[in-house]
Image 1 (cartoon, rainbow, N blue to C red):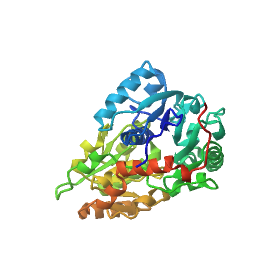
Image 2: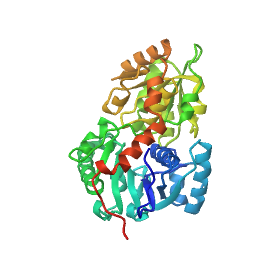
Image 3: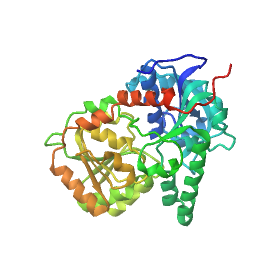
Image 4: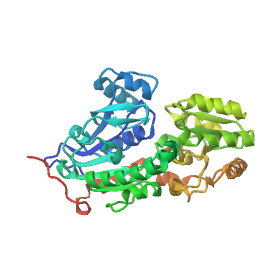
Length: 395
């Protein structure tokens, strides 16, 4: 087990994220769980997240509003306890702007300025965190190791959503992001082949460093009468909602949508127009409490890198029907994963999943265990023999 080390550092690990709860987006959870998991291993951890004011909060989520970072920190501590996380580590904030156009939070300052001296700094979406033009270079960061986890396919979003210029902008974004990760990190972990181009030419580590909350393994198993089909995620067209509508229309099978997002009204209108039997059930902060009635997770998204909701469904012992694309390669070996390439293939995969009982999810529960993921992550970050030397702590 990796031990905590003082040695002039304020923290062992700083986890820096592009998002935070109550915004229910992947990075919010993918920062919270490892930060808490690393702290539970006895390491001194600080979680660094963006702060946006009440007007920006209204663009990102429904629910609580915070007048100050301290209010959000107190809410996050209570929410972490409700989610079953270990006690929340220390929190720091950097200034951010909620962009309606980009549907993300843009850093308004050098994020490293908000990071205390840490033996290792872990950047979740490092290319995004370093969009701010005056972000300091790696050599000026007071950490022995600066690493990044690549798990957003920005090129896909641009190719799909930027009109005729999409292919050009997507290719340009990948080239810019490749430079940013080289400039600001020692090495990165590509979470799937979908982001291999961003990591090309840079030092990489290959490891399963993401997991699923233990509550998913406690979801009651599928029984003969369990027939429900669901989609879980942000309601934006980029998540493949066109295919969800088409499959529901073709099969006449009802599909429940758990989530919310800026395209929700348009998706609802399209479903009505096409006569697709979709039910819009709204956002759900604790999805594991809703899965007992479902047999199949339908996830046609092509925009993911390593989709956490797919892993959660597999750990819960559900079938998943998902697109055959590089992002989903990590799931190919699991028997309850069914792949498709077009709506007809999705219909066939869905009917196959409804007709067969899921196999026991033993392997996927082992592979996506958060404790094991945090153990692997701590080893990568704090194994000083295998990591390039960075800046020493300032005296």
